[in-house]
Image (cartoon, rainbow, N blue to C red; front, side, top):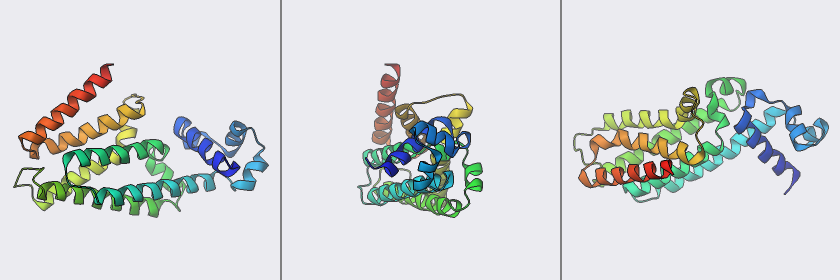
Length: 214
């Protein structure tokens, strides 16, 4: 593995585990067992590290959104793409630990992050519309305006679920973080589902509870 790639991977792990604000470039150099000058040769400070990690996060999310739009509009496919997207968010969770402060600190990232949120929002809205058109969401009274409200609620979960769990002092591992977020999303959709879809959701909930217990 090239040194630059190794620095990025170690930095990501440190940021995720300890929080970006709690680390300096010197801390990262010490963890890598290299001199600060060696680190500076590859990245001109922590700002460049955070920016490049964001670029990777952004590129990965955009690819997942594109692949998600090409999928079939079934609840199972929706569940799968939610899982993969939340998995990616968890892998870069330091961005979501205190997102407002981070965006204020790294202002070059802020407009890009806001654009990415809009892309995610459009993706969620298109998926919900697809589920409605395919009859997966069975409520004929689910108007376009209500789809937008559901989209906003799902985006709140995408953006703040990690911080919410931390505020409640819940240190969730990746699987529990993802499954709990998906189940919250499915709970939002439950009032609009037909009987078969509700049975699927209940089966997913039962599976999650079994896995959680052991």
